[in-house]
Image (tube, rainbow, N blue to C red; front, side, top):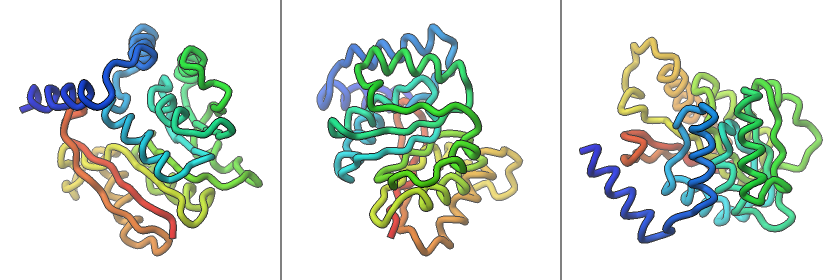
Length: 218
């Protein structure tokens, strides 16, 4: 089944957006620099691009930069005067991302802030609200990250959280996997959060069986 999922993703990419030398070079550089291959898929990257445009985003917050693959997709969705703030724990990942963003021609729109995301988020005060937030970092902290996205957003802000199905692991109430525990805590938080409208969508493809949350601040 996995081969079919891969083939369908390849078909979607071929028909709907084709090859992209810049994004291919980004993934190649990430691999060469030893980054883990956990970027969003091309189809998911295009989805983020479209979601950000649909939301009319002028300021985007990304939690979890890695090598900047999803960052490039999101930066491309911004208007000429738009801004993207992206948070990355690992200095090496941030260094690779800077090079990739420069090569992609979007570095002037992106502010990479290095350090624990919780610290970086707490330091954001007095800035304009974010219109769109993409969360793809340590799953243990997802509920906290969403709470911070609400604080830093506005009514109408769109929030996307990646990797929330975990091949069905989200159903395992007795799991000792911190990523699953954190994901279940996220769903508990969403179910009780009156400031959000939210849903989750399962996905299959090159990233196997997973899914994402889509939420909107009321």
